[in-house]
Structure formats: C-alpha cells, structure tokens
Length: 514
Image (cartoon, rainbow, N blue to C red; front, side):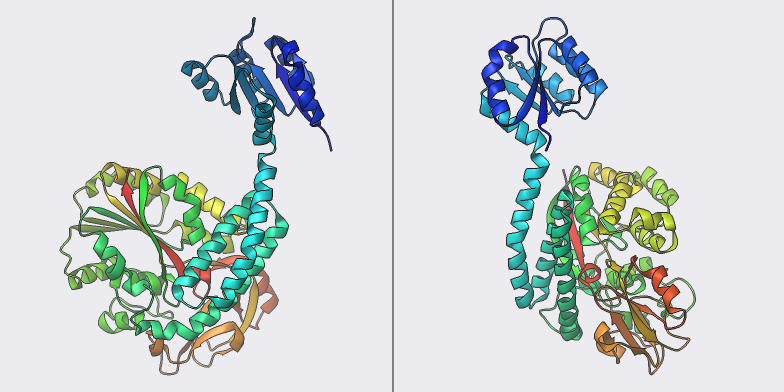
C-alpha cells in the first residue's frame, strides 16, 4: 500500500521537526516547503494527498497560496494552520474551501486527527456503518419473525430503507446484498400478512389509515386552522421522499411524518381517486357512475378528481375556498409557479404532480431512462435531481413565503420487478403488469393475492364472474404468448398495482414554514 503523502508548508519548518518525525513513525510521507512559491512549484511536479499550509508567511501569503493550490487541484484537501484567531481570516479561509483549520501551537495528535478526518473519513464511516448494520441485521431478522401489526410493518420497512440509504453511501456490495435479501424476505412475509388481513381492514376499527380514509382522518384536521398547500406526488416511494427531504427542510420544518396504506390495486385510478373522493372504488362506482371508469373502459381514469374532492369537502362540512391543479408537464408546472401568488387567499390549494409516475413509466419505454434509473439508488438520484430543478420546488418556496402549511403525500409507490409469473386470461382481462381483473384467470397461486369476490375488498366487478389478482414481492405478470420477449422487455422496470412494502406503505408528511 502506498504511503499517504503530506506537503507541509511553513517558513519555520525546522521547528516542526518533532511533528514530522511523529508522522513518519505513523507511516506517513512528509514533503516540506518554506514558502508559498516553493509549494506551488512542488505541486506542479508531485502528487500529494493533503497540504498543511501556514497562513502567515513572507512573500506569498497562506491565503494567496491556497488560491493557487485550488487552481492546480481543486479537490486537494488543504488544512490551514495559523497563529491568528481573527474571525475575518477564518471566514476567508473557510470561504476558500479549506478542509480544516488549526490554531498554533498544534500538537501531533491534532495533526493526526485532521488527517484521519480528511483522508480516512470514508473508510472509518464505512467500517462503522458496516459494523452497525451487522448488529442491526440480527435484530431485523428477529423482527421479521415476530412482526404482526400494520404499524410494526411500517416501522420495519422504514428501518430497511434507513439501512439501504446508509449502505449505498459506503459502496459495500457484500453488505448491500445481505440487505437486499432481507428486503426480499420482508416482502414475502408482508405479502402473507396483507393476504390474511386486508379484507378485515375495511370493517376493523383498528385498521390502518388507507387511501379512502386519508383525507377525513389526517388531511381534514390539518386544513381547518391554516392556509394549506397539499401536494400529491404520484408514485412517490418512501425512499424517494427521504432522498429530497433535506431540500424541503431548507424552507419548512417537519411537524408530523406518518405512513398510511394504499388500497389495492396500488394504481392511480383506484388509489388517487379514493383519496379525493374519500370512498372505496366500489362506492365510487355506485355513487358517481358518471365519474368512475373501470380498467377496460375507454378514456382517462382520473379526470374527475376535483369533482370528487368537492363532494368530499361538502360531506365533511368543510366550507373552504380551494383550488385543484394537476401538473403533467414542465410547462404546466412553470405556469403555476409563475402565478402562484394567486393562491394566497385560498384555504386549500391541491396540486397533483405527475412527474415521478411518468419517470417510472419512461424507464419501461426509453432506453436512456433505463440506463439512468438502472436500480433503486439511481432511481432515487434521478428523482432528487428532478426535484431540485423543478417548478415543484419553486412552488414550495413560494408557499413558504406566503406562510402556508405544506402537506406532501402520494397515492402509491412502485417496485422494481425482477421475476415473471405466468398468467392466462380472456381478451377482456386488464393489461396492468402487477394486477389483473377479468374472467377465467389462470395463475400461480403462491405468486398472488387473489380476490375471487371483488366486493369483499370493495372493488367493482367488470362483469358477474370477474375476479382480481395482485402480484406479490417483485413479480410481474406475463402471458405465455411471446413469453421470452415480454419478460426481457419488462424485467427491471418500475411497476405498481400489486402487494409490496414499496407500493403499499407510503409517506404522509405535514410541514410548517420556517
């Protein structure tokens, strides 16, 4: 292993001989210079790992030398050492992106700590993270064998996401593979849990908050006392929310974060319509047949969300001034952002933002998106990059300026599908890859949650003998016809509609303006 090279620049370098001997005894290589000019010349010829730079030197000052070093190699860490504690000097040095700042006289241990902080940081973090996850692994494994309630499942899922985000930072593929196997096992157990309990949630007093009860239970109490911006980001997973949460926190502080359960199918026409109507799909079909469309019906399935919302507000006795906006393009987002001040008198402004859903569908259809979002890590990164440069962030900034409360949620999540499951149906069978509804469905029983009587889970029937099946884990439905082409086309794409932690357990966040 190559020794770490240190360039130490100080006009009184001879007085630092004990420090240099100490570092060399720790297996560091130290090159010395007595002036800024000498250091610049040395760096032109020699690659070093870090620079210790005296701030007060004759000729070229430390700060001037720092500027020249950054021109040569902007990524090279520079530790400024000075006798002065003047705030202006500190601020200038920090503004010039120094790695650390030490006040003379420095002792050898200070130097060693600075080296470890700047050069060994990633290794130390990696080792600590790996060690912590190894300990947590056993606890998660134990939790998996004991988890029995919807709240425990939500807590376990968020714990798995936490470790996924931690481990992805350290690039430890071995640990990541272990975590992935835990996620797979968790989804297998979760599928069994939902299969046993889902039907009862519609009648059980102790049921989780679900799509059709979300507005009444959690949103309505929040909008009574303050002007509110409600953003429903279509297809937003918990890990994606965590990825851009810090950006939101620049403008808002979190008041409440909770998770609710999407209804089945975890698809937009069912889950999002349920949010805005406050009704199950079966109730929507009966009460508002002119606004509800089944899977096999022609036309848009989410064209009446504003009307559903208006009716729900009346039922809840909420006499509010409100507006609804659906954003499906950059142009629409920009237009609303530029005119957002017009919302200042509204009690409630609702925005449905479709970008994340479009991104997941684009991964299926566009090769460039397949490359950019090849796995969950890059999918999160792409979402974060979009958000930081989107009109949605501009709208959030303006809402903060107007003193509006902010609620961010979604209708369902999505999962990266990996394995096919064969299914056969008639020509009227729905086309979704994670759920099917139709007559005479033939399928692998262990792969699905089946609802032979749709009414039992509050879903409408396309005809008298229709049933529903929902894919579990990371499966997707494939027909035997042209099977190999179909499988290769859809494998490693993001789909929704089925039963998984990623699709069903989704964020609900309330924030107050800073």
